[in-house]
Length: 286
Image (cartoon, rainbow, N blue to C red; front, side, top):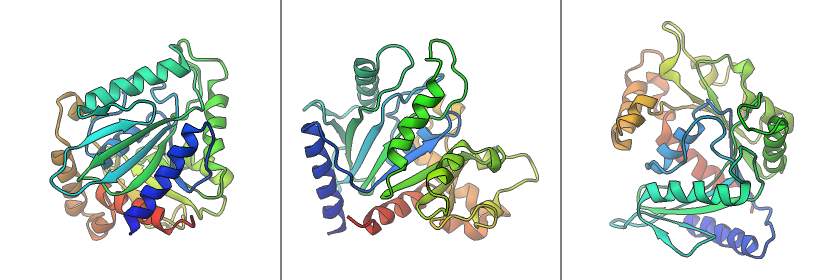
């Protein structure tokens, strides 16, 4: 029943998008700076490499990502709203996202508010709808528009200002939380932290002798939905094509064996994050 409800919402959103309209339904918007590890969090939740990577702004259009759980055994595939083709190769999904981005947002580094809608069917995901938004940036680089910071900020605000939008604020643990762009923006529209979930990445890259226990347990920056720590693949892991299964096992081992985090290990990691987001989707008033 729970999965049916989320799929019904997905169908309603698709119908309105096809008609050129917008349905103001509850959703989870993913917000973070370009270097926060936002893409890695999403890919680890899905268990596949499928998002464009590179220097500068990679996400230049909102990506509405609908994850649909299918019973075992089932073939994993992706399907876009703008084409009937099914994509069984996730490298082709990445190329299609890039091509569709260029088609609407152009070859330069500008951004567009027109979303790309992608459904991923897999036995390895929970029913969940996320909106991946462009990474926050401060200074135009290369051929980026001079007002790129304002463009991205306004695009993100269009989503997170809605009172039924849950904000997934991604911040790197190896940078002072007071400087977190995602939390600053989230606080501007959700000052009491009632609809913001904090995600701390790069816990494994913190300086020796330091940790983020006080943040993860809500003593530093209180959020009603709390903070969840994750350990993503490193750039070297990605370059050497380390499997998602191995990466998730490494993440679980990191929390279970860490002297500081092992007592809260059951409430950390990507699998717990996905379960939490799934429950948040179901708890939202439709």
